[in-house]
Length: 383
Image (tube, rainbow, N blue to C red; front, side, top):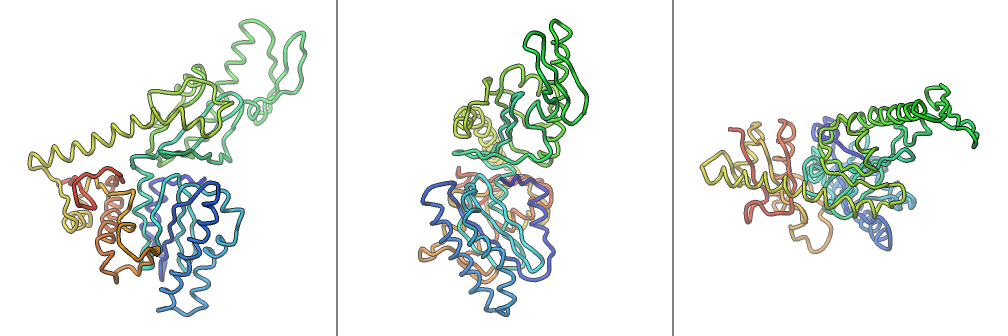
């Protein structure tokens, strides 16, 4: 699973690579017959992008540019490990693939910059969250959406107490001897208060190392995070936690026997309430300001200009379906040469507004709830 943060998306937005930029996006399936259909759709997107590129580039250059996309097409194993959305960004200088737990439009776009607006729902959308299932035997960080969660690989984070304190032997009649995994020290748990304190110290040491590792993983994230674990473990982790978006409420039960689907089932009600409250607060603020003559707008041209000038504080863009999906295109997936197709002009303005809002430190909020009728976007302005 790929965990994107604001700086990752800003890097795509600010790409200064020479030459053509190609953006390929697709909603994907995690399992079932939909996987094969996804591969067919990906093939169609790559073929469509190729046709557009051949109008202005030599075939060898086009083949080199699209090579990573074709390699993915033929990698059947990779398609078994998709999430809900797939995006690939290609330039002559290189490529980047991301899988996210949120739906993306089906789109191939060719131009002087990447299409990144749909990714911004990960920063402040109304259906994205993180989940940390924590126990002394297992640590799982998951990226979630309204429907599913998927585990994120934790390469430099201890995922069980044994990673920090490993057992080296045991005497059933007395106690068990433990040897630290990474610290290299030996400890002995006997009986009584002293042994309890030693065990508690090791547990806190474990959680301290977990928090330190997750601090790097979560750097730049803004999604709400829900904790799942026994009360004593959740409380211990809260004492050390530095991530600002951890929910006050938690699921207080052992996560060890819960599957990913079961974790989503118990966590989503808590997360949904937080996301709904955030969405309602932002949209209510927009309408309150509008009702008092405040600095708001839902005019696409005006908002796009304001974003370019750095005046947008909060930008709302419609999702599910995205602008790109609402443009009629004969049923075929949209293949767009940016700047040349009037059918997608409004979509490009929305994309431009999102890019500039992010670049100037504003918030882009992708929401399936309509903020203003018949408008692709709305904005709260700084001035």
